[in-house]
Length: 404
Image (tube, rainbow, N blue to C red):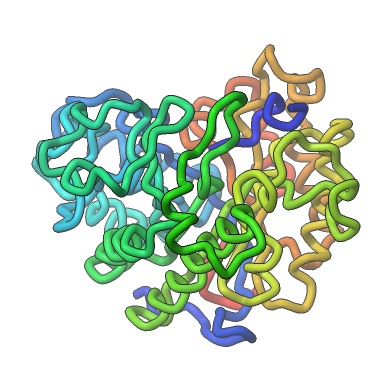
């Protein structure tokens, strides 16, 4: 997940269905946490553990969610164009065994769905559409990795490898790969984070000129073409999910700033160094307005009063975006910053996050919060999560299927 301060200053048939634009009606309060698997951030604690150890660690995260009175976990199941289930499209994830393509001896996603549901938790399957690797050496990928079979699909940028979003065959493939999990498992939602086109890296160029020359003729400039590519990915995925299982929700957790007001009068009163519309070619506001998604969970990873991107101002802005759309607004919360000495003074106060939830109660569009990330939900270094639970989660959250 992104959203660092540095980036700124530079059964489930229980769910209701309805609402405009083909998305589902608002439901109850979400209390969620992300469980990141890329580079073994949250789980597994390291690659190469036995299947029994991996499963035990996963179940501990689920039990922690229950203990914190949460009702949803967002599990990263496709971290780097590899899979935490036996996918016919992509290799087994490297984070499991340390060797991409090596079977772990169990089915992590299947187990996660079953064990989450047994605990009254929703399981949102979190996919990264385009990231292929956290390095630029294709030879380090498993021999049958699609990025090696189709080298023309891949571009290096900023020390990482990405699928090229401008290629129609890439957009279809990544959708097929993700939808395989929807077909196989009783997941409650498909979840994407903030990575579409890569975050800008100074002095580097994302070399998609050839694709633009081939497919971008109808657009005024490359940026407009790129945004259309991302729109297509979102719109197509939305429709395909509903055709497979109409009750599976589709949610996206973007970087918290769509555009600054100095760039666009419709933007937020912020001075962020990244704007999703301009830098990631992701028109997140449009996706809400068009009803292509069921929920949006912007990463408002800043404290109340932070000059460049004030949590309070962004909360009000996003509440305005969802008003009248029927799209649920969940707020992504930076639990990982609580107690981090590198963060501003506000984050040294265990009550900062609790104040976020108190403020959010003033806005009818806000239907819950999601915490980054699973490790900190458990360890809670300065007690910020404990304070949230004490102040706001006095009893176990109801299942999300009912109306709020």
